[in-house]
Length: 423
Image: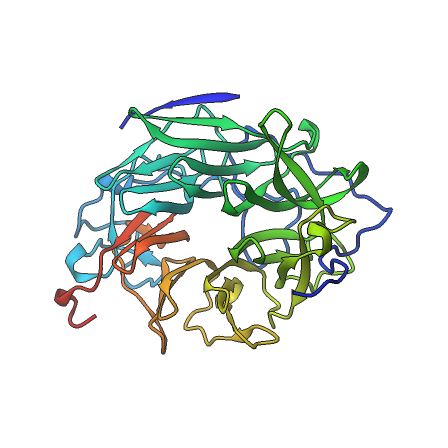
């Protein structure tokens, strides 16, 4: 399917990742590839067929004015914003977009300060050119869960195993995306939660577990790796696995981390929620059983909560965040993840930083946390009127150019402000 989007505006070992994979194969849960839905990420175990409804409509960001009161919001309620504070008094400021008030943004990623992408529910794909955010219509109603690219002309946007869009960037004022679906049958489609790669030829997808042919045999899988067809086209090779994959990040093709939750797919592993795995090269270039160029080794995250995002500044400094304010960090020499004291119990959904002493973490209830190399503190933001939004994605081009996206909110950080009283 070709969519023409007019610019309207370590060591060798058997793979330890496949958990409870045997002859008893569960049927895949069908997910409509054109349903506008987003996974509800909370602290309850997530069934494979669970999806949350799109938030109710509310005033678009660009219709809000600083200081305008909201009669339906109690100023004493810490979970509600009754007044939009002036931009100059906070670290993060609201920026208008073309997002419908009924939709949410799920993820943000870019190549530079004037080439940034954000995706979300209702088929939303936005691009920022350094001046304004503009929608690139898709004609779809899918929720896009993640966006990543290897360069300005190689961008991936993922929704489900049946809707995996590849974009070539903006050319002559238009963006072109082509659907490159996985081989999973239409009746067995599931959500794809994450996409990451180290180059145009090394790209991975992860998400909910699916049933299908894996190396010629019916099995259960939760990842795909990109492969090239004889004619030069792109295909996806399914990989065996049972946990729900929530996030993938790596410092290189041979050093990859994955966060996963095995509680939703196996009644004997309901305690296996905060799983992490480290991927390193497999002997012979691919695991003989899984067809994966990496061997996955479990690493203890010391977490009973699902980890929603994993990201690092280098191979020796990796962060993971998740439910109930969970923050973990692993450094060179650590045999397991270290617990980091968190100032919040809010579910945390995304993490990014410009370096080891400049880390941003975002989550529910308008939560924005910053690590300066010594301590983690809450950051201030201009939020839309009403319930404090869930913030779902964070990315920046530098320490003083960082974006956050979420429900009814797109926020921009441009560096410290003297008017904030030293903050």
